[in-house]
Each structure stands twice: as structure tokens, then as C-alpha cells.
Image (cartoon, rainbow, N blue to C red; front, side, top):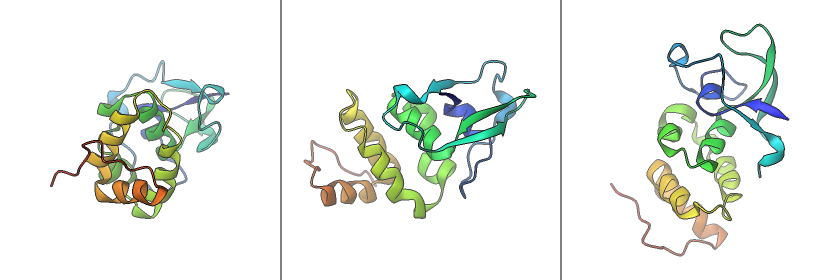
Length: 145
């Protein structure tokens, strides 16, 4: 199923208690970023249905803010996902589900870059999660304070 995601989805309110982005007027809504659930390890997780998006009369399936960030990370679009923790999501209660979903990307060719991104965003919370899962091998990854 096709759905709106990425930076466009971050600019649509969702059912989560999250901030999202606030630059909707700066985006080109004539061709919003869309992905297909069949092409993703996340399948239909985090998709909200019949959502209104700017400059469109019809409704669309739209990724919630977590799913939008997960898609950006999966695609290696770390610059767009930057600020995920403190800006877009900004809700520590959701960290466990985020970490579990990111872990689904462990076979992604960009796994090392994904880990670096997650450390930058979540620091010791992410490292402690990986240790608990028994998959933190260091790999020169550390928090910068």
C-alpha cells in the first residue's frame, strides 16, 4: 500500500503525543514523498488512514511521526531525520518502541551509520538498549557529550 511518509508525514498531525515538524508551508505538497508498505521491514506499522494533507482534497494513508522517522533512517536520509529525539518525537515514553523498530534494520547495509545516528540522537539510552539486546559490540561507537 502506498502511503505518505518522510518529511511530509512529519508535517501532518498524528495520533501520537509527538511534536512533528512545523515547516509544512516550505514543502512541495504537489508530489509528497510516498513509499510502499510492501517494500519495508516495518510493513503497515504506524500508518494512519484517511488523513488530510495540505493542498489536497482527497485523504491518504500517512505515516505517524515515528514511522516517518523510521522510514527516513531506513533510507539513509539522516539529515532529514536529525532532531528526531528532541524535536519530532520529544516523548521518552516512545523510546522503547522506537528502539525495537530501529533494531529491525540491523540487516540494512547502512547499519553502522544507523547506529551512529541513533547514538547522536539518543546517546546512552540507545547503547544501553543494544547492550540489553546483546548486540552492542562497541565498534568505536560512543556518545559525545
